[in-house]
Amino acid sequence: MESAKTSISAGIVLMAVGLLFLLDRLGVMDSGVYVPALMFAAVGAVFLAVFFRRRDYWWAAIPGSVFLGLAAVITASQVAPGSAGGAYLFLFMAAGFTGVYLRQTANWWALIPAGVMFTLAVIVALPALQGMAVAGVLFLGLAATFGVLSAVPVRTSGHTGTMKWPLVPAGVLGVLGLIFSLQATALLVPLEFAVPTVMILAGIGLLVYAHRIRGHGPRTH
Image (cartoon, rainbow, N blue to C red):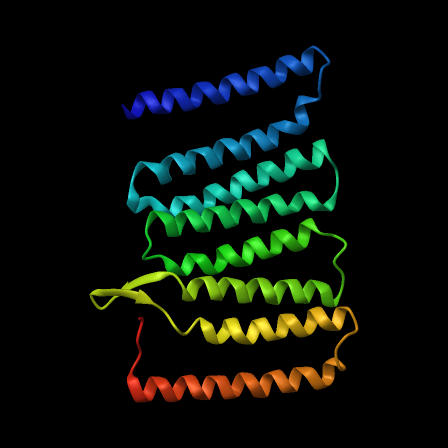
């Protein structure tokens, strides 16, 4: 069975390469520019095959998504040149880390890089964003990531519940994102006053959280 799967994969790759060379010979397209993309896609497909083979191979989704993302970036740069094509790499990586979590929900940590990669994909895909607007989207995206993490069921100490600690960074990052977003539209006080204020509020939030932990002990539900 394993040898049959390997033969099928190798056959598909050989057919694709042969088709590219045939189109090149016929003058339909310059196949040389797509060979690197095809090679990256083939390597990525191998890692995905490993990922789907067994649950213990969840790690294979990460390199697989990277190689497939590189293939997508190369292809996009040839079809529609532009800086926005780089967003495909971050999108594929976000999908890879999401797959790590979906394969084994104990890997809740994978949602953090997944959210970061998705946020970067949005930033790269919108070249019109500049300066404070980029910072606003970045911090709001990170805040949303930790917000989602706080709602994800996690199994610890024999029971399943949600984690509360992500709400702290979610709140801090959300406020910073809002400040940068408003600053980008010149609707807020100067940033040199806003940042210290947020730091003070964040410190108060951490102290409150620490007080709850000492008084009630760490809980996940």
